[in-house]
Image 1: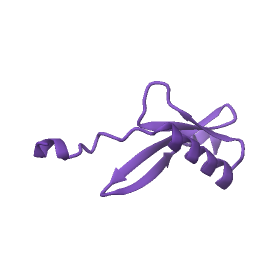
Image 2 (image 1 turned 180 degrees about the vertical axis):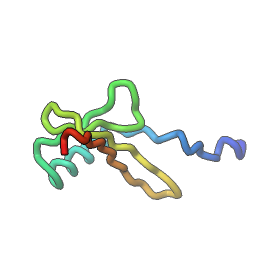
Image 3 (image 1 turned 90 degrees about the vertical axis):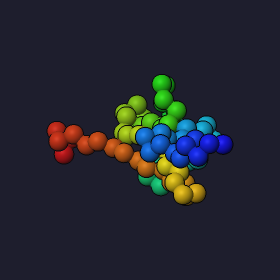
Length: 82
């Protein structure tokens, strides 16, 4: 394999697999609220969406770096909601 192909572009993210979505869903339900749901995104596979009921909360991104796997949850909070 060429050396350039071995270097991972920092803008590229690994896809979130269905079994990972199930594990994330169980984690969010267990840790925060049983009504939370993690769903695959319709047009992207590098992340998953998090909902409480029908309300969108945020996005979970998969991050695999130096052999360590983690997931980052990003949620925007509107000033009108404070």
